[in-house]
Image (cartoon, rainbow, N blue to C red; front, side, top):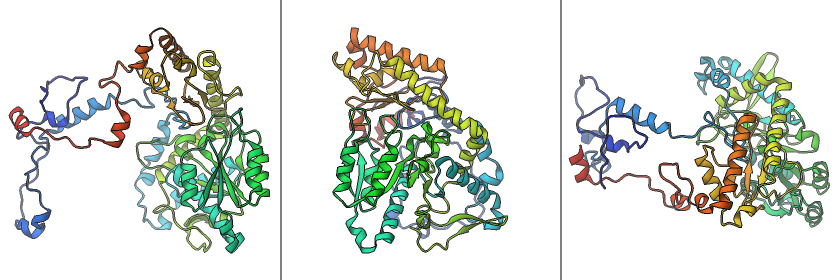
Length: 507
């Protein structure tokens, strides 16, 4: 391959770090060896050693590395630059105060193997967060061990399995059907299957709600272990028959699991435990503003009713007098689901968020999130097809039907949004809506940003009507253009292979 000329001035077309390599340039200096050299053969067998002398590894200085990656970092879109309208993801702003608290040396520097008597502050913090989340959800049992929403969900389904096995004994093997709405998150059926359940789908009504008649039919057929659903559901509508859903499942001998991914629409307003829900997971990275995504540490607390508490993971944070301790002695527990006690830094951030807002502030955040979504839903409903007539909660959903008449589909609209400076919304989910565009602004977004987003969406619609090719070929302002994302996911190129002859000459 040809090697681009590396200029000395900053450029928006930053080359690869390999292309900045210059022979003999280094970014470190080691002290002179002052011990006897050990023969290399004694250290590492020959069959495990490289034989290419590290050809192709870039030779760069520290400043080369710092500037290279700093320049590339300016290409990233982040929550600090603008709104992330990803529906179902709740990409709210990560408060800097939370980060400051998480870096308090006593928290940040605490070793996970420190004895209990030296960890009382951390244990107290976890205990207080547990109390707050129990109050917010109306469910008395909790474990903060799960490291993400999906693991919290899996933990909840395992609790249901353990409870049924203990209650029904050998007969529990005949109760292995988990009911899940068609619009559920993809992890729901996966978690159910991993826990040994067979999944049956519940149809939705034309209003986007759970079809109660179909639910009753499935319950009457027998073998129902429970139901997994999200409320507000995945099309952003509150399940107004929630208590009837819970009563129907309980009458059939099953339990109710609620996916807490959309709790940003309920905190301070309604509690799942009061609705009849038996177990729920929360996403601290969604509802309580801890960092989101990127494969880093997360926290997906699992909460449950008193009946399910004996099966929660161990160890548990408990209090005796003024002392906090880890209780491992719970014979009925499903066991540990995460090393140590989960990702402590996420817990510090979440408690900081809760304390910063207080009761009134948490409720206000929920009201603002719902108001923002309804603002978008109302002002775009005359431009984009709105599949459900009811008022949305924290996220608005549209389809591409109006634009598809001109050959412009959801993916084109999402890509064109990049040219307008916005991160695209969630696309093609949920699957029950053709060409779905799921938009969740969260409470972090002010009215001026909402108006700018709405204006951009309307402009894109106008382009779709007058010059569809402009939208179909978007984005136009990015360095690479539209990628073949399917091929990139299936056949990723993860290693740079240089033309060594050309590379050596350029160096």
